[in-house]
Image (cartoon, rainbow, N blue to C red; front, side):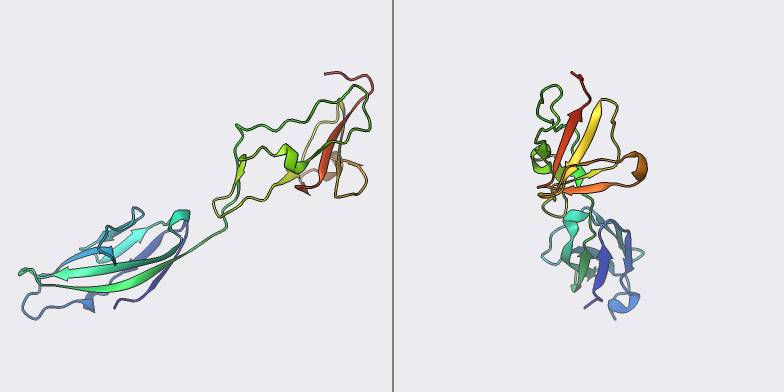
Length: 193
């Protein structure tokens, strides 16, 4: 058997089949080929160069796991022998994706309403607007900037008190709010729009 190989998702992998793996005392002209262990074609991300005896490719998120491969040497008379090995592709943590075509909306509030209940972060996140290639996306909101010109933006963590976002004092920082935390807009006096 050939040596097991390790690869990492989204990173170029290169490995060679040792020249001494195959030999034929009657025929020195061996033709090499590579396939999956079950005889199927190599995955689209992986290429085999039979002349150089090398594998090259970049596995993606869908390629994470173990992959059985085999290299087959065939002589000019058609006699063949195969050696198998495993390639283990390690996962990397992919960032969640925000689908901006799905826009969250705060509910309407009355003019001069300074005591509105706001919305939970979970209510603001449109179903399906956040996906995670590695599994289930966590519904949370990172707030890093805002506009207080027409009123004040507030947040409440759990059952705590309402707190105004302080965007000016926290430039370059983000506040992470979980699904159950709340956000609200308190309009300036006589603001209507």
